[in-house]
Amino acid sequence: MNKPILDCILVGHNEGNYQDFVERQRMTSSTTGAYGEVMTNSILFKGRRITYMDLMNYGIGRATGRRSKLSSFGPTNLASCYLRNFLRGCGLSAEIVNTFQPQKALLEEFLDEPHRVVAITTTFYVEPSPIQEIVQFVRERSPQTTIVVGGPHVFNICEGNDAKTQDFIFETIGADIYVQESQGELTLSRILMALRSSRDPDLSKIENLIYREDGAYVRTTRLSEENVMNENSIDWSQFDSNYLEPMTLTRTARSCAFSCSFCNYPRMAGALSLTDIDVVERELRQLEEIGVRSVHFIDDTFNVPIRRFKELLRMMIRNRFTFRWMSFLRAGNADAEAIDLMAESNCFGSLLGIESGDSQVLTMMNKKATIELYEQGIARLKTNGILAYGMFFMGFPGETQQTARNTFEFIQRTAPDFYMTGLWYHDTLAPIHERAQELGIRGAGYNWSHKTMNWREAAQWVHYIYNNIDRSTIMPLTGFSFETLPYLLGLGMRLEKIKEFARLAHGMLVATLDDEPQDFSRQERELVRICGELYGDDLAHVAKEALATAPPIEVAV
Image 1 (spheres, helix red, strand yellow):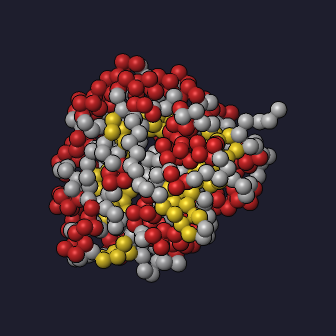
Image 2 (cartoon, one colour):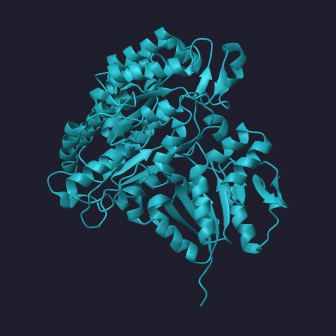
Image 3 (cartoon, one colour):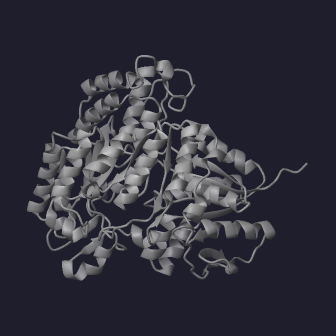
């Protein structure tokens, strides 16, 4: 009896080789701030730049004698979950490979079975090389497979480049079909339906595609998708419980209620779309019944509108959900009642996109927030025992030596539990680029200058802040961001030990900001002690996902 043909294999994130990434950035260090961003997000340890997570894995390995394979991309890939849920709702079959590097064997198993398409999501990519690696892997093992790539990275390639440049990038990646649409679920389903009907379908009839035909790339008609949130909420009961542990990501809205001048996300995602609270309640009840211990709401503005936010929190309290949760939070839009409800509903932490500690720069950013409201929000969170993680960046147009100092003083004064700061990244698709001539903006990405600052001056301020803040702990965006906390807590780690680890890593990061090797013998002894205590006294409780069953080995970075 012939096996049924799987319509789609969904491949989530590929972390790639961090050392290759570091070396690529190092080669541009004289002309761009990209390598400076590497240095402010990593530690020079035993001759190599590594992330906090690399350091934790090293410490756990030394403490236990077994290889640790924790990853900040270990949690469920939400884009893949939504796609599988959507496709199954259309009567199509789909399976997920959550993360490429650790699950290559699973992908090979799927490729060995009858299937039609491998679809690659691109939510977290800033360059095409990790996508190219997946494509090459699939091509070598299953040359007949149709490979589709879509998501934010494809959208940004199309929006930020002319057709000739797009063609060059797509040829380098090597996929068969690219989906040029910020949502893309409906477009992918149409591709799969067409391939079900014919081995050689007429793709020209499907909107939002870029594909190669007769030696040239063809672009079909653009048609924006408006997939209704309520109709496409995830049925979590269809997922294996092991897949949703130790932490699950979910959302209650799409897009953002604001129009910050440095951000192109609202342009990409369209108008703010909200899921009804009763639909959210059904999803959360399923996660509770499955036994999920940590939930991360990825909504860009979870607490906006504020009335809906309070209704969500009261719903969670009414259901007595036991999982801990975290979210992004507009600190300037959260009153005392909302933060009290957050604490009562089991919130343990919030990511605060504060961006700057100077009121004039906030106005330039169109943040629609005040320094005073930010200060009140952070204080309220800390009073209620909710961890506050402040995100900042230096060098936005209008930034001066004084505004940069104001940001330093704001961080020192408010003392969020964790923070990060980095260079402004000039996204030419963001609204601020429309004022480039007026503001004297030149360059793009991490290579820029404007009337009041350039990237080198901003980088000096990032170093100054990291060297002089002593009331808050650095938690970088790369490899071990604040979102990693619910993942580690879900694995059974103790929060006080994670904090202790972060403080140790903070000191090591600061010590190697100048890219000079340091003697970390003392810190390494502390690291091994801390990592041996992350899960408590009984190492039998170390999560099976954290440690491989291989025999004891000497772990090397």
